[in-house]
Length: 180
Ligand code: IMP
Ligand code: MG
Image (tube, rainbow, N blue to C red; front, side, top):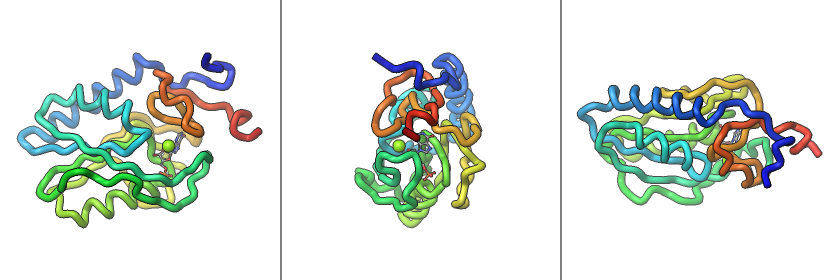
């Protein structure tokens, strides 16, 4: 059983679906006639990406990268490691990196710098959630679902210590959970 006393709903499933549809419509317009490669950053982005690609009305391919920076803490270690690299070359492709949340920006800064060296035609970022107040790396997302304050959120793919990814809404995890 989910312990709902630890969670406050921030965005419901219905609200998220509307936001994802808005992002998909914009991406569809922007990439019309281009060869689009959508790259998901595992694990957090997998739920968002699954919904997003189904509202992008264009031919596209997908690939995944897994990086680790957090361990089981709610504070970034500042160190990024590639745990799983892409399967295919991105040379000559229009790359859209899909991420669950941009916090300090360290993870996406690291990833986009690596990708830009591999000869893509373009690299853009789509994140569902953005915490601009926490930024210390120069990362600006091209597509943003929601800007949020400095909350620690879980659900819809986002985890705390690998839990809560399956919850369909986006919830704020009460600090009492990770401060105890
Ligand atoms: P950054 O490198 O500080 O931008 O951190 C980005 C990564 O940290 C995201 O891909 C998430 O996996 C994780 N993260 C940051 N904030 C949260 C949060 O509020 N909930 C869950 N994961 C988070
Ligand atoms: Mg994570």
